Length: 273
Image: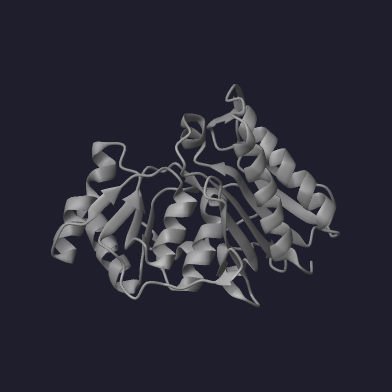
């Protein structure tokens, strides 16, 4: 597994080139393991990732992906690779340039590896062709250079605000922070979470119960290494989310640091009363 970060970045870059060199078909081919529609470009991107990593990684691994669920090709896999081949499929279909590819890798040393156990990760910005990656040796890098974090984030909250219920937390959060923050609903959870890690936004909120572990595993690892804090709305540390199978994340809160996360958590509790 040497040079694994390079393999992940190169693989993501190849898929991004496929997605951007031409407009790929958005014909729906099936309903995926997450219950969402799988389009041609989703499935072809996933297959490219699997084939490329199978060629590059000379070891036994478990492949867990948004479109096809869990693929096991050996009796005793040593690694789990968690993939969202196109995070922001609706954006891609509409040619809105906020789309990413997410890949996270963790050793199968325990019965239930979690996001905390991830040793390598990449979130690749498809349209801007920028890789945000992590390994245990070099930490977080952006396009190969060490990542830097803003000392104070701007007053921006990222997330999904698609219904009255998903918005209920916001007025209460504004009250906790003492002023309003601008809202942006951009459409790629992985990129949003990485941006909170970098300090380009102060928080990320998703209360829709639509996210899956494959959507956010790489991003949460990268953001946490940078200093962000994340919880499920139940209070459970988001880094304890398991990886061996696709699982739903009912509600996710990410803050620039513990103070922001605490305000988000309090606002969410009050919004449920």
